[in-house]
Image 1: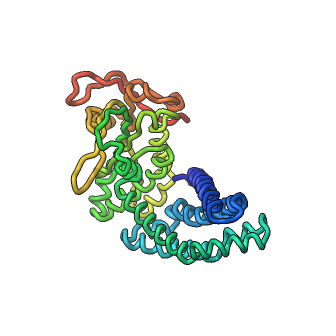
Image 2: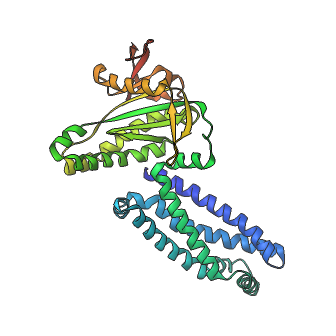
Image 3: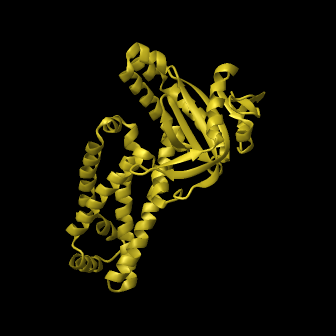
Length: 356
């Protein structure tokens, strides 16, 4: 995730948290205090301040920490260790902010001190502050646990499973971007399988920022290949799949000195973009997953194989281009209809590159 995108996500999260806190405070304050109107105003301001501080500290940590040295070290730690460390730290922050009455203290500047003291006494009698802090800390633990569990299967897939979006299979149009990492085999032969795992992990980490920034969803990692998907509605604007691809290329170019120093090799990519109708549905028993079935998947894989024979590293089908807006921002070379193994009808293919 680029720094600009991090700040964008952070800003949206802060606004949402303040709004949610203020709405909760209006109802809680009006129901708990006399007079209700003053209680609603004080509750809205106090809880908005709590939300602002907590989201600023905890949300900021979740958004900015992963790109730091400490965040990368945490990312290599076992799942339970990460959840435990974050839960302890976040709970301490919550307790300090709530027990320290930060919201009411700041709200004093907008309200009469005696009125605030009365409100605080009423609140403490109805809902002891220590109880509130304990509930929030416990909630924080489960939120951290839930978030990291969701990352194991993909946050969007987790959301769709929870909401039951694909409990019944549905037909939908999607883009599929197959990205092959070139050069992993020589790394494996020279440094061994453990090093190639680290090599690919570092490539996938570098790719995750542009994928998130352009609203893509990692469907799966297959060996040294990444499969990224968008619904046509999500990917159409600004030719997001192409922007994502060249964002990954740029991210790897920026990280090239690190790859050269650590692995003695700089990763290169081959990629193909195709689009069409698939059936999307939830499958499995003890392990649930959302999968895609349709000829588009096979065609995209075979289109990616054409990069080896056509001499162009990045290919896009006419079907995908027809569904994109803003593809003219890229240099396109018509390679004509191409036969794909196992398909009767040829597919018109274009080589794509970033414009200089």
